[in-house]
Amino acid sequence: MGIRTGQEYLDSIKVRNKVEIYVMGKEVKDVTTNPFLKPSVLAFKATFDSAWDEDTKDLARVWSPFINEEVNRFNHIHRSPEDLAAKVKLLRKISHKVGACFQRCVGYDALNTLYIITELMAQHGKTEPKEKFIEYLKTVQKKDLALAGAMTDAKGVRTLKPHEQPNKDAYVRITEVTKDGIYVSGAKANITGVAASEEIVVLPTRAMGPEDQDYAVAFSIPTDTEGIKIIVGRQLNDARRLEGGEIDALPYFYNHEGLIIFDNVFVPMERVFLMRDWQYTSQLVEIFSAYHRQGYGGCKAGLGDVIIGATYNLAKQIGVEKAPHVQDKINEEIFLTETMYAAGIAASLNGIEVCPGCWWVNPMQANVTKHLVTRFPSQIAQLAIDIAGGILGTAPSEWDLKNPKIKELLAKYLQGVEGYTAEDRIRMVRLLENVALGVAFQIESVHGAGSPAAQRIMFSRLYNLSYAEEVAKRLAGMKSNVKFTKKVEPWKESETEKLAKEAEKNTETASGGK
Ligand code: SF4
Image (cartoon, rainbow, N blue to C red; front, side, top):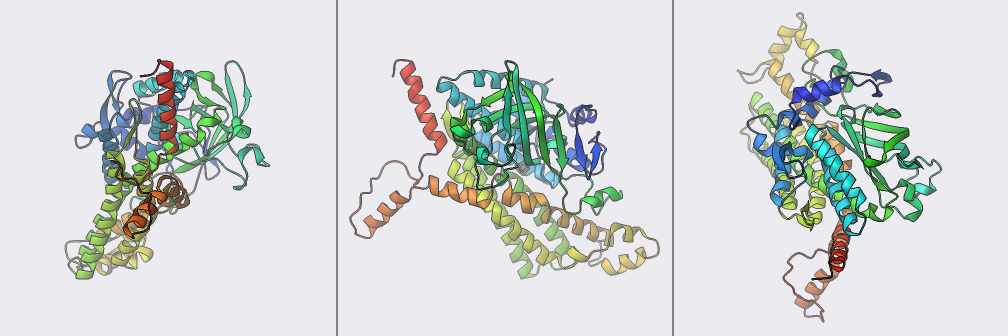
C-alpha cells in the first residue's frame, strides 16, 4: 500500500467493530464523526496529508531500506543526523497547519526506540526480538499504519516499585505466558491520540530490576483488540465542540489524551519485543524520552509561530502593532520560539550513531530542548495575553455574534481598526485562547515526555561536573588533574552509549576481535 492519503486513513479507522472508546461516559464507535474526537482525528490525519502536500512532501516522504519503498516519515527509522533534523522541521510545519498536537510522533519515537534497543539486544546475543521487530516494522511501513505510543503507566503509589504496589496492575504486566503469546493487564495513562490510532506500541515506563521482570514488557497491539478499553480525557473548552459552532471551539483540529486499560489482553508472541528483559529497560526509557524531548523543539516552536501570528494580528486589529512595548514583546516571543527550535535542531545534528545505522538524538541537547519547552510556552502565552487584552477572557460567544438582536451592536463595539470586523476579532481571540492556553501548549509542554525533574536528573547524569571543576581549579591556580582531550563538551556517556559500547565489544569478541 505504501504511503496512504489522509482520506485512506479516515476510511480505515471509521469502522472498527471491537474498538471500545468512551467519551464523557458514552461509548463511541465512529471517531471520525464524533464531535468530541473529530478534531483530534483531523489533526492526526494532517500527518498523512503532509506526505501529499506540495510544501511538506519532501520532508514527509523518505526512502526505507527495509521495504525498498518510500514511506511516511512518521513510520521511518532515522538513518542520519539530517533525518533527525527533518523530523523537527516537519513537526514545526505541521503545527502551522493544525495549531494543535497531531499525536503521531509518540508512535514514531516508539518505533525508533525499539529499533535501537532490539539491535543492542541482538549484539548482546539475543537476536529474536530484533527479528520480530523488523517484521513488524515492515508491516507498519507497508500499510502506513497510524501508531500511538503508550509509555506512562497508572503508577499507583509513586514511591513504590511496580512489584511493591498494592495494586499489582498499577504498571502494565505480563499475567501469563503461553507458547503462542502473553496475556497483559494494567493501564497506560495520558496516551496521546490513542483513540485515533490503529495500533498501540507499548513500552515500559521506568527502569526495572529483576523483581519487576513481569513489568518489563514491550509489544504492539491493534487498537481494536478485545479487552482494550480507551477512556478519553476531558480538556479545557471541550464541551464547546458539542455546541455545533465553528468559532468558539476550533472544531477543525485538536488533540486528545486517553487512559488505556488492558483487561487480560492476549498479545501474539510475534508482537512481543521485550519479555521480562528488565536489563534493557533503563536504556529503553532513556532512548525514548530523548527522542520525544527533541521533537518538542519542532512542534512547540510551530505552535509558538501560530501564537506570534495571532498576537501580531490582534495588535493590528486595535492599532497598537507599532507601539515599542508591543514590538518588544513580540520580539521576545520570537526569541523564545526560536530558542526551542534551535535546541531541537542542535539535538538532531549532533545526534549519535549508537549502533550501525541506529541514529539517536544527542541526549544532553534533547533534554535541554524539552526543559526549555517546560518554561517558554507559558512565557509566550503570557506575552500574548498581555497584548491581546482582557477580551481573551471576556469575549462574547459566536452565538452572540449570530443573534440578529445584538449582532449589529457587537459589530460596532468590538471593531477596532477599519478593515477588521467584530467576527475577525472574535475568531482570532478564540484561536489564541485555544492554542495558547490549551493542553498541548501548556500542560503537555510541562509533563509530556517527562516532567521537568526528569530532565534535571538527566543533566546531572550527563554533565561531567568533575571535569568542569578541574578546569576551574586550573584557571584559579589550584592543583588540578584536568586532562584536555579532543572532546569539547563536558558530557558523560549515557546509559545507552555504555550499552552500545559493551555490545560493540561483544560483537568484536564473537568475530575474533579486530
Ligand atoms: Fe508530536 Fe509534539 Fe504532539 Fe508529541 S506533543 S505527539 S512531538 S505534536
